[in-house]
Length: 326
Image 1 (tube, one colour):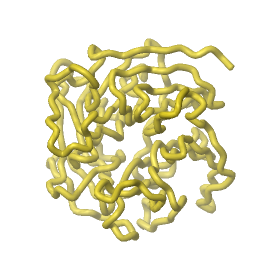
Image 2 (cartoon, one colour):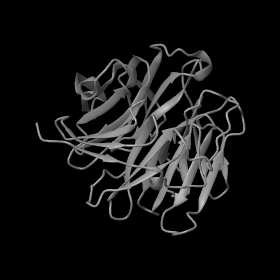
Image 3 (spheres, helix red, strand yellow):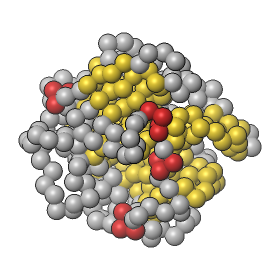
Image 4 (cartoon, helix red, strand yellow):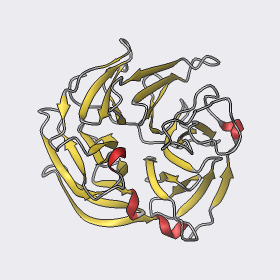
């Protein structure tokens, strides 16, 4: 096993000092226009920042105005101003040129009362994979979730994995033959073989059991992840105050510590592919009356975004775009 290293970030690494969310997630870099996008699940918001506009960081927000709504994930499309928005009941389009989230163009086949969208990705063929899980009012989380695949051509849907708890971090290998998928409450990133022709998953096995990386009884949950072109994985650790970087064999390379407990997602970004952008959740995310104050940088800094410039090219996988109409 190679020797691992540790990096510690601080409040000086906060990316947008003026912004602090409740449950920020789904961090996504779009190299087409050098933008960074993310969601606040509880607030029902999609955010976009132009990285090239130094100093101003032009910040746009799309918002669901229905208090029952949430946004679990987003996906890029062929139109840089349009994203897929995975909400409580299905998938809609959000348009930054109009500032609106449109009505659902696709609704999930299950009874939408108990479940909501969580993490999702677009596969190398343009199809959307999206996990659903127990919604906040119905917690504790039960094994009632699913991982869906929505065909971009005809909007047919297949249930790829059933009886999941917290469907989280997903990625395909560079050749598309393997799916990496996290069910957070199993404390494991799972690896499957994937046959695109038959659209089947097989040979489930653990890629990374995060219990091996942490001592003590309170093992943090694996959350969102991203992958580089060599198969290395960067994994956000919820209740773990860090991102772990492991190689293609699942061996620890690096821990990136953060001044927040609940780390939710991570992506490689920047024109030189040398930056990690990291989302976190506020320490009081479950308290609807809590004041989320960006001016307060004392204590747990959950809710802020962080930027880590690595000093080396990371060669992160480019996010796939939705193959359907945008």
